[in-house]
Amino acid sequence: MSDERFDERLKEAARAYARRLPELPASLDDRVMAAVRTRALPASAARGADPARRGRWWRWLVEPQQVRPAWGVALAAAAALAVWLVPRRAAPLAPPATPAVAALPAADTVYVRFELAAPDAHQVALAGTFNGWDDHATAMTRGSTGVWSVTVPLAVGEQRYDFVVDGARWVPDPTAHAQVADGFGGTTSVIVVGPKGVVRT
Amino acid sequence: MSRAGRMACLLALGLAPAAPAWLAAQQPSVRAALEARGLPADLALAVDSIAARAGANGLPEGPLTDKAVEGWAKHVPAPRIVAAVAAYADRMVEARAAVQGGGVREPDGALISAATEALGAGIGAPSVGTVVRAAPDPSLAAPALTVAAALTAQGLTADQAVTVVADAMRGGRTMAQILDLPSVARAMQDQGMTPAEAGRRILEGGAPTGGVLGPAGGRPGGSPAGPLPPLPRPPRPADHPPHP
Image (cartoon, rainbow over all chains, first blue to last red; front, side):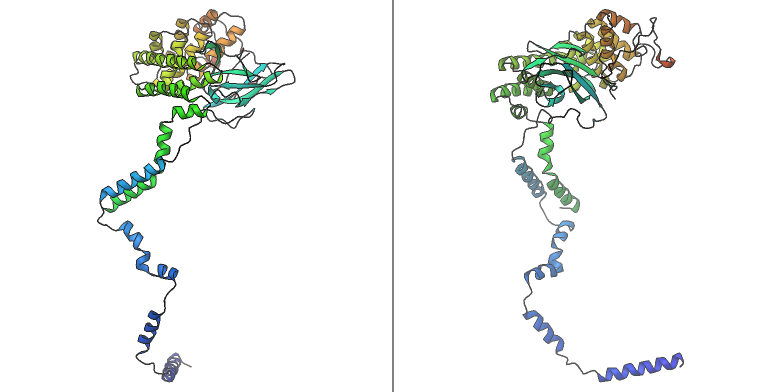
């Protein structure tokens, strides 16, 4: 069968099929639309189905409107005030307690090992500028020979500290770089931490 | 309102919640921090008052709160803590003037604090200015003053300590090398030198770091520039490894 003949027969079949379809009344569209309007939509469908309503917020954002500039500033100030009034927590002076070897130091910190021979002590801690002078923050570990030690990451620069023996006695470090007056009638140990650490004998 | 203006307002609204945290970070409440640390309210209030006056005068508040906490931790009576904090604040005023005399018109808190410690160690205001002037960069003046104060506390005379640090900076030594000076001086004294001898040895270039005051990187192998032979490195016990 040639292509022309095939096309002709296809068109004839289509015309015969169309002749068999019933004639639809002209009022059908009106009746269907009237039925749709009388049936209430669910609330959720009504909110989402209306493209005009859905785009209202976005249009408010992007289209020019007549809004007083002071309103925006006032709203921002009100929001800031509301959050400002929320009670604030005081910034802690001391960092959380550190184990014998703390976390990885930053680039400008180095590990420094502190030791104190105190065979009769029951507990020894390290307190100084680096831990907010908290005598509970940096506990030292007792070795078998009665030497207490701890390794802590310290920032490069000057650090002041003391050992706290048995929670009450503040003892200077005999191996520190220097002892200086603490302003309270006592002394405080001083070390200057360089990028390579602290060399002590 | 234009679109850009409305977007700016919305951005301000979005960032508004972060504003209190930012402001709080800039101006932490000294009193609240001290009370959180366990100081009684009246002591915290007294220190807060001193710190507020210092802050209004452009001085750092941190060293004052740190001093108060140190005293409280050491069970120092409150009146003595307040007196020590007030004395430190007064010394900071002198320290700032000394730094300004060295050519830094608006020193930051770290430099003022370091100069305060230097004054407390017995270094005079003119000598503080000398160290500040010798610093190749104002940011290096604070650690240099810290080292000078530490050397003085180790027993070197103030003039010796200032000369050592100033000459080291003028000789182009790195700040890492200068920060090692207290370790060097301590090692020398542990080997039997007097503080004066240690200071003289460092000035003459016989320091174990290869001549602290010698020409910067001028000799291979870090050999000392001075007339004295190099000292051995300070001994390190086996249980005290070099710190990274």
